[in-house]
Amino acid sequence: MKIVNTTFACGAVLLFGLSTAVNASLLTDPNDPRSWQGATVGTFANLFYGSNTAATRQQVVDNQLLDDSYFDTNGFSDAPLIQCNGCVTSASQSGKSLDTTGTGSYGYVINSEQDRTYGGSHVDEYWIQTGNQVGGAVWDLGAGASTAIIFNTIDHGPLPLEAIESTVYLSNDQVNWVQAVTQRVWLEGFQSNTGILWDGFTYAVGTANGDTFRYASIVWGGPGALQSDGDNEINGVMGATRTFDPTPTVPEPSILALLGLGVIGLTVVRRRRN
Picture 1 (cartoon, rainbow, N blue to C red):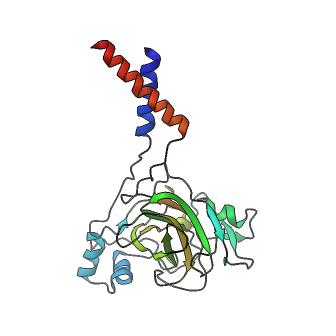
Picture 2 (cartoon, rainbow, N blue to C red):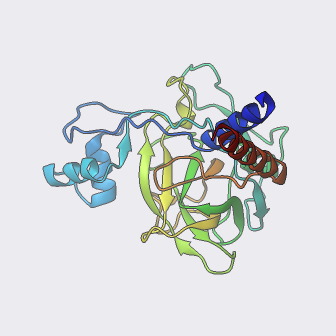
Picture 3 (tube, helix red, strand yellow):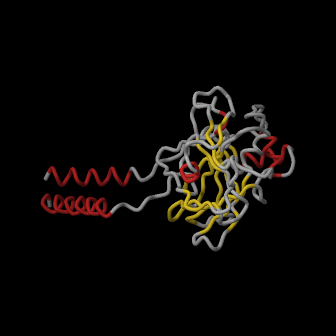
């Protein structure tokens, strides 16, 4: 009987572990005086809503656009870069940011030891540049994503323009693509060490009507970018739910069998007690 109970307990833990909440530190003051690498609430109001006024700064707050924290990647999976047709083929097609301790440097090296596939498939210090062809650079988020988290690498200002300098397109079949819209910006990037500046302004995108999708394609510039200067630096991509939690994964057959045994065991226990 102990084995049966232990099996069920393991199954319960596995189910519980499928959801990991993202802690939010949303900006609530439209007149917050702080600056994040030169960007203020007013900067975002001007870029996203056309002007820096009391009304547009309130829109920033009401639409929960800014999170004064970093995006915690625990529980999330890196989306693999499955296609890079049309990606930049010059010497600067991929690179590695150098600061890992918080010196505040934007320094990087190009032609790093990692290739484009690795650089685009992992959220770390390696990055790639994409082309401007929709469907050229494609990431597989897994089935049922409602949001794509875009991790960019910053190599200079102005900000946040240099961080959000891409347009993201979303699809379920890699044929029909829908332009994504920006939903939220994490002002401190994805690392808890806020002295590492090249990872700032991680942002989330989704469809205007909340559809789910599997694939994300990123192009430099375009209608969804805050600026278009001929290149971008993409660190990686992750899929998420509408609440910016990890997308649920389908359990492996062995896990399903384990859960099934737990349910059967619990039923046996209840019957014997009755």
